[in-house]
Image 1 (tube, rainbow, N blue to C red):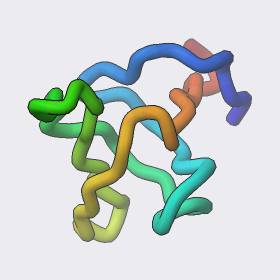
Image 2: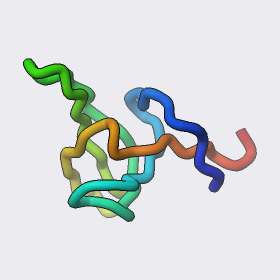
Image 3: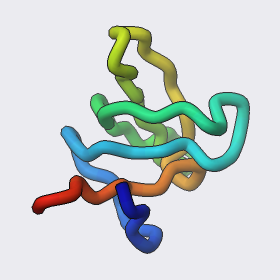
Image 4: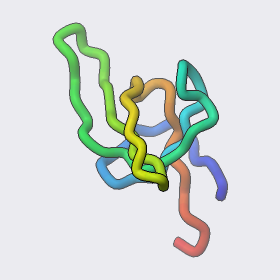
Length: 67
């Protein structure tokens, strides 16, 4: 899968975490929120069902081959 340029992730997008505690993990973006301080957070759901929260600035959106 090719990685697209930095863009705002949307609910349902495949993403790869490139920085922070969860770097190297990937999954589907769910539950996007903006905190009181203005930081955008999101929940990533991995293929095995495990969920974790991370900052949107730490992820890149992946394109699906064939799309």
